[in-house]
Length: 634
Ligand code: AHR
Image (cartoon, rainbow, N blue to C red; front, side, top):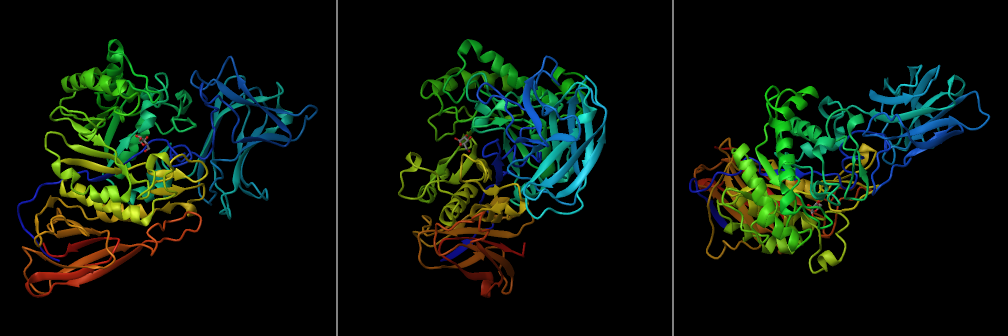
């Protein structure tokens, strides 16, 4: 195919083309990117998931019991664990062990921990990291007692002498039965962190954060997803319960079958944005819960005020605003910048049709009015998109969530061409989830992102880039999946306790390639007659910020390679150079990157091309592949 990339006539693109949504699903927050190693560290519970001792076991004949004390560590954490010696035991050690999020990675590095204790005790405490199989101790530390009837926090550092051979390890906290003055001790908020991404306190797990940063993202949408909506009107995402000291965070009944600690709270999300240089896209609760219930018109005012308070907490001046002062009192005097706020999540779905009607009639308008008055510079995003049967007011963006089959992505290649500048579109969640020709949502999602699905996502993203003057950005969702407990199988990265098992899916390679070559201005391509319809070569071209020429393409529905003769109008000389990167997959389009075998089925080839006469680059793109060419010339 002979194509000429014109030097003018294109459009500026969004500055935030690629990013992701994060919410706590698949133990992707607790047990995922949030680096805490202790599972159920504070016995947080809710009506839906009552407090319990999951993850904990007694050590040396100790008896563990869950206690709701009259003087808890805080109002937010009413339950604690009581550790007592078995009857008759007056000497020797007792304690408790935590199995972590299905294991713990133990390396010769500094771990930082703490716990709260209440009860009169004369003696020391000992903490250790041990093999759950052999009992081998990799590292231990002594923390001096005593403790009293007041809750007190003990802090420690623990540096194992060597790496454990696997992640089948536990954390153990022990003390001497002899030193107990009142027969037992109460413990709570038992926490242990390895070194974190960019050394943040209460921060992110390094290997997972690095795998995400490797995707070259530019925005983060949070905190949901369904998690924002909550199970019912009492358990929506309460931002003000996710801030401040960990002992003041009650956690919440997650919507994905487990209790969330909210250790990864709204401030930690913003620190994540800072550390990866991401634009925050903040979702605020819009008065609809997943059970379909929604606030009546007479009550929407408080939800609007609640969202305005959240904004004031994040961006308000520390000296002149109430919530800005609260933020400063927590150690964050400097306001953040929030430019994008999404009102709700998928308000077209739960409680349909009444829930959606309420969004159109009064919920969305109430938020819009209040935000436009107080924060006129903020780009508002309505949770339905222009594809979700909502007439969105001019100037407001919409959020589209295509979870599709590969064929649907590819046949819908021109779908975004009809977007107008009246409403930018955020592709707030996207991935291939079902195979072609299947029963879609009547059945299961595919077990992992698979090559054919990933190529189709790439082609869809190319279609988004063609329209990137009207696209706000595109996010893969959900992004993480703990292989020990999950609810949604298609994620761009899979992980477990052992960082060696962190697996980059086939989609990771496709999204990373496209995000690594950012088109600042699209440029029109003259193609042979009949080819604007593109099949089987789907492409976009443009210019980078540095002025280099970029051509991105995917080949679908072809058994043959597609030969391309490509010319950038401004490059005329023979011998001009370009780099071509091509991603191909396994012979079986259903092949995937399996975290259990760790075989990467994606093949990435790089070649240096030299232009022929007139500056024409000749190359070919294999079937079912995604390729990017970037010129060295400007
Ligand atoms: O990404 C998984 C879920 O899919 C999100 O929570 C929700 O917004 C969508 O339906």
